Image (cartoon, rainbow, N blue to C red; front, side, top):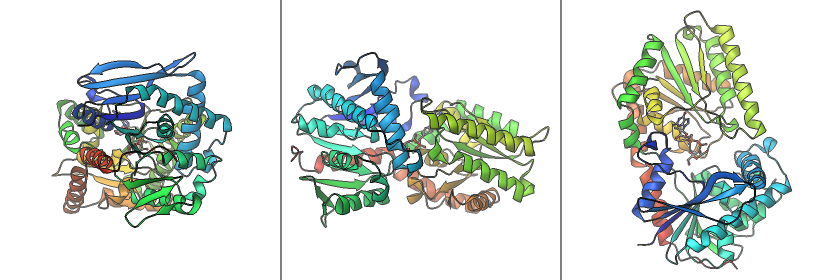
Length: 464
Ligand code: GDG
């Protein structure tokens, strides 16, 4: 059987002890690597004075972990720069936050090429190469330039923007050309796939054939959508683990019969956090029966603290939650508990289960795993209600959630008020439908369907 080579910016090995904190995605990729005796290649997380293509190898189970370092310049230009200050905002439709700095894209292509040079000596002819996410779009193209003919796939975890948005990027054509070095491109949803096809046909003189193949830049490739899932069974088990139950009971005691609404998001401007707090503020204003009776617990661990926009969003949230609490709090109740730290996965599972509703209202999101985790952690006899943004990829699957438009504050307020008063039979019915989806389209189904599709495409050819 061919080996699987996973390439991603960060490599995260879930050992038995840190499984509690490792994300579901890391666990799923690692289990695939174990199954296929694979290699996981990526950045070590180290920043050094001068980086090279040198690779450090570690062996864990039957998996080889191969990592390489970044220099300070790489970190600024590739990671903080092009990946997180240009591609991330742009692909989430935030042209206003996008840094169009030519220095950054040079660094991006340089680091992608260096990753390819470091990886190539580890490859065997029959390997399947699976590259992940917007950091490493150009890695496959450099591997092809070096003569690698393995089957190569790429999966984009974030949305693919419409052509008009993508074309604001000076080097959009170079990115599209780089994508055509792969044999299979996976997106989260049908709208992402359609946006890509549109770009290829209308802006890259490409062709879309009846069977879905795309031809451009001298190569023919497959593109499809593979909605990512979670390990639903594991999340359901975690939600009744002793650690989860401890958090569940502690939370219930502190709520004293009041209702809890939960939000869990990396602190990121795509997650719609200021708009969410504003909607909660309006809920208390418009429906006074909620005062003293409902609390919003917003867990938002910091991410990418070196990027200015992330510092701004943190300050904005601290101010907004302080303002709501200042306005509405009483001596024995605060409306917003804003927590800027992260919790172990089992603790999180207990908090999901203790919440009568979850507010998952990103302005735009590739998929959103929190929505699925919340569903999987519920008590089937007394499930909470999911309020989900229409602009999260997950909304395409989780149609039984209360779907809202996060840009329309009143829609979010009405959705939340409805969720807080939904009768038990309707809660159970909605939850059953959501849970069926989360279980049947779980992370193993996602992984196997991508890998099997990649295995079935014609073997990779050199660039034109
Ligand atoms: C990208 C795409 C796509 C959060 N706080 C804590 C914690 N988390 C975990 C959640 C969840 C994960 O982080 C966040 O996943 P999301 O899917 O919500 O979002 P991104 O990080 O933006 O991920 C996204 C995803 O890739 C997968 O393709 O769905 O659209 O943007 O698992 O639980 N985990 C722990 N403590 C916390 O405090 N342990």
